[in-house]
Amino acid sequence: MNETQIRQSIIDACLAMNASGINQGTSGNISVRHGEGLLITPTSVPYGDLRPEDIMFLRMDGSFDGPNRPSSEWRFHRDIMRERPDVNAIVHAHPTFCTTIAILEKPIPPIHYMIAVAGGHDIRCAPYATFGTEELSRFAVEALQDRKACLLAHHGMIAVGDTLDRAMWLAVEVEALARQYHGCLQIGEPPLLSEDEIQNVISHMANYGHQKKSAAA
Ligand code: 13P
Image (cartoon, rainbow, N blue to C red; front, side):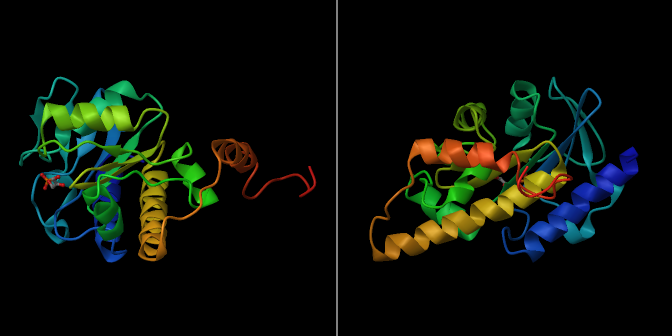
């Protein structure tokens, strides 16, 4: 993909994020690693109005190029990219069920084996800090340690990936888990899968999907 195509893919992902129901308005923001920095959505521009040239280029020192200001959450996008060489794309959104669990300041526990797609036996909830602050960024980086997703208390959710497609896919999966957990909590405290079983699922998942060899391999 050339740079214009990457910029367009960020806009397409923003529109898909709102169409899928995992975000609303301009509550979310998306970034993709690019060169010595990242391409990131501008702050508070309705996604339907975005043109490729509106996507901002942000350097690791916080300076930026483009006609707008970068997302107010540029710090955690920049800091996650800096701390996590495995991450090339970040999706931040305010999905209703993730945010509901995050308002309770709860992690998502291992209620379903699919929690493994976020990298471990739980999806942590970072403590509350004001949006856009270094403190929030620090909490987010910590909550994402050995994980690909986290909740942000009284705020929303972050999903990361080696590609934008995978970060978007994960964001939808995490919202599904939060919705299931919310449903469980209406009935009572759900029983949980063990940490060992989630590790077992993670190793099985390495072989999941379309394989060239036979199913028995
Ligand atoms: P931006 O419009 O600045 O990206 O902010 C929205 C948001 O998610 C704040 O947490």
